[in-house]
Image (tube, rainbow, N blue to C red; front, top):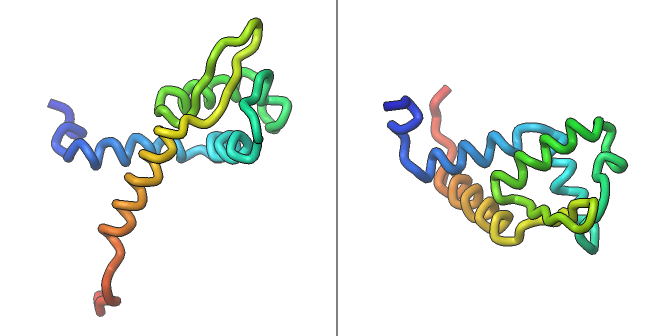
Length: 109
């Protein structure tokens, strides 16, 4: 048994999403895709200060997490946000933040 398995499934899911969001390049990619009115067909690395290989790895991580979609279109891949994945992210983090928000400040220190 892994130590990770000792935690609730919801906790594991939030931690996995937080890990995907833990790199500023992935945040920048999500923001870029959100600000773009259509899906991007082409090289997103043209818009980021990173190599194509690095951007490709970040896109793979975001796609694996279900936050973006990527479909092959000819020789290029068309990328856009995955609405269901983003909604799940918002719900999960919203629930977590609601759960850990103190009702009043406690005198701990």
